[in-house]
Structures are given as C-alpha cells and as structure tokens.
Length: 112
Image (tube, rainbow, N blue to C red; front, side, top):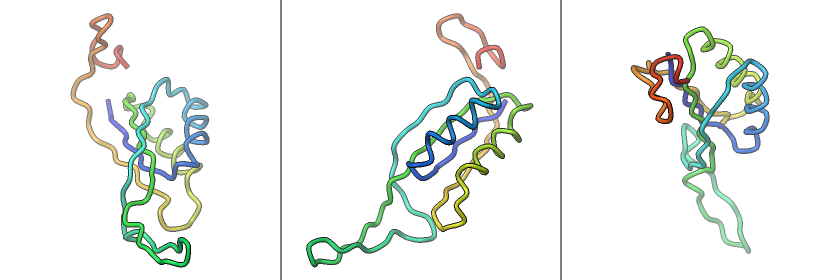
C-alpha cells in the first residue's frame, strides 16, 4: 500500500478528482493549504501599493491506494495538473504501513 500526497493549484482539483475516479480510486482527502516552492511567492499591486505574497494558495490531496494503482494515479494527477508553468505542484509517494477501517475493524488493503 502507498500514500500519495499531491500539492496542486486549487483550480485543478475537480480535474484531478475526475481523473482519479476514472481509474477507480474510491476516496481522497482534500485540504486547503498555503506554501511556496522555488518561485518564493510573488509581488502584487493593490491600490497602488506593491506587496509580497509569500505563501501561495494550494490544495493538498491525500490518497491511500494499493500498490497496483500507484503508477496510474501518479500519471492521472500529472496529466491533468501539468500546465508547463512554475507552481504546478508536487506528488509525494510514501510507504503505508497499516490501514484500519474504524467502523468494521478491517485492516490492510481491505480497509482502503
């Protein structure tokens, strides 16, 4: 089992959800976050005054999936979020040691 964490631009969330549903991913968790990468934020102009936006709005998607779906999920996320511009986001893949469904007590892949 793997745990995928994707940090993406907010307007791409619906596209990612649709792409993941199309490959059979049944559930995901979404969190609104702020952050920056290499671009280190940007400057904006508001009422004639320039100010720095250090943290850009992003969306973090977390998915627990079986090993057989990992590559398809990565490709689905990458395909729909790639604009070719800075700030498209990142995908992190980590090993998932154990999953437990609270309601039934199921463990492992059955709990996903």
